[in-house]
View 1 (cartoon, one colour):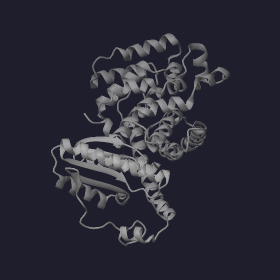
View 2 (tube, helix red, strand yellow; view 1 turned 180 degrees about the vertical axis):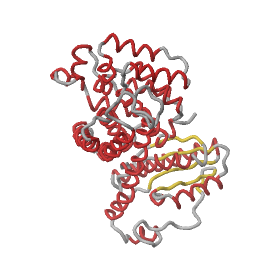
View 3 (cartoon, one colour; view 1 turned 30 degrees about the vertical axis):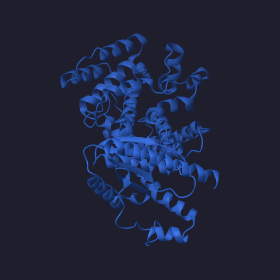
View 4 (cartoon, one colour; view 1 turned 135 degrees about the horizontal axis):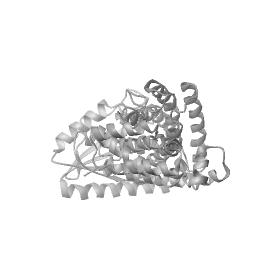
Length: 423
């Protein structure tokens, strides 16, 4: 037996012991594992599949999920809460038979350590025959099966990410009222922008944002990944300017969310945890603020040299420390929760857009202090802060970008990391 084969065999034995151990406490155990041909079971598609289908199952059968990994590939063990094995099996069968990628996943239900077998065989991925017969006869080459899996899964990854990214952008854009920022009913303090323009900008940048995620998702290593992501970001900026006739609607967001997306793609594809995303950004960018030491002709550089504010570069360099703190306020996606998160970001982030509009460091700190003093969020308080912001012609573009980052991170966690959502 090859070294890879021996490792896979040992991993399967370990998984069997894990199932037996879990069954001794709960009786019913559910295994979620990708169908991955060949000896390399730890592929980006395998990680995506188990992380996509486990929350899908848990939404119908609540329980505790534990992520495990090894030579036989990644998998989840689920211990359902007050659910019979028959009910769990029925849900598993429905998901496998109705989901677009159901053929690529195995959701096996165990009762007291013994698997509940399927009543009918599954069809081959490449033809209508019984899958077991095709495997036994070697009807299809390994490479053909692998290619079919990628061809089937790749559009699903793109579609899922499109939905998550677009919703995170709308979480911010549709928030109304919003302290002089563009909303569905107001241009706020931005005479060159309105809601329609922001929607056009969103549509223009979405392909590039997805591409940055895929750069991380497909990367074989982190070497050169930051440069690749940045190159895609510059291309995305150009698409934005073409859509807005030169108006900067989302340049800061392309940078901030783009880095988060690249790191998220890499983390998801390599079996890392949700908590690894922001440290991965920190690792990828290194000492990014040093770039400002040789630049003098941008407002970001002026803010850095005159006031030691490093803006978006500094936030990325810190592993999005401010955004991570703000996530504590994003309890859900309600108006109140998003507004409270934005208020925190305005009060605590190094927002160079606000600094520029403020006119001086003293005024900048004073405006931040106004938001920092907010104790209770009510519609009246938000209206008053919006009137204050418009009267002083303030803008909080950097903070708005970080709100999108927060919303994306929360949605990404809910979509793919059920073990970190429990309780």
